Image 1: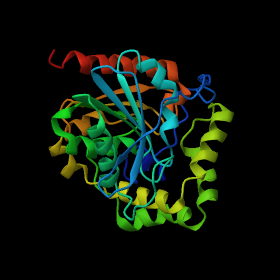
Image 2 (image 1 turned 90 degrees about the horizontal axis):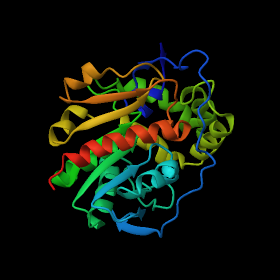
Image 3 (image 1 turned 60 degrees about the horizontal axis):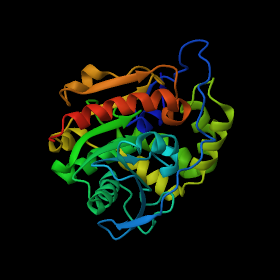
Length: 306
């Protein structure tokens, strides 16, 4: 078993996981690397610690879907979802502090602080109800935000995340050992890590290069501190504060999500698996992913009072 940061990025403690390759002979999915980026005027919200969070709003429907990016990424990673969702929902994308166009004047890069970023944006919206959709690290961030926003949240959807719920926190020495290469030479560590552990061997090569290069440009101090906080997140303390449905749309990279274990902490938890995809399934397999996301969002919408 390979002990690596993959488990953390899949949300996420540093636990043993095996590099997944998808079904033998799986064809590469058509990636959304070249999809045009949606456009909307940038807006700004001030997080609790006065960091300016840039966000964009698409459409004007009653239910808002807030898309939260993952570790060392930004709002552009949802470019293949905005158009597919905006006809039915108000779609909101944002850059967490230290990412994309948002401010970087923060000293503590924690999941709680990122949750405050999302909550600050939601509080600027006129929509009474929102669904939080978080990829990778964005999953735990969505949970932190849901705990802050209470009844405004109709549900939380994780994307390749929540796998470590119900597992003990990793030993501190193990976390330090795995993060050390990123402290020493962040760019080199990213270029070694991303292609090998976040994609399958049949992934589109141009998408792999693009994501690797983009993630390598994240400020190392932000990225390393975020991983550190991610591995210290105590789900057992956070989850009792959340009273909405939680589900995940996951790949089988590294193995199938243990839904039975997770249900011991999150009764009613459901996981939908997209076999053969890598960590960035919303880009690698956008059409299939969007169909599932739209179906689950429709279920949340149907449960809301009319």
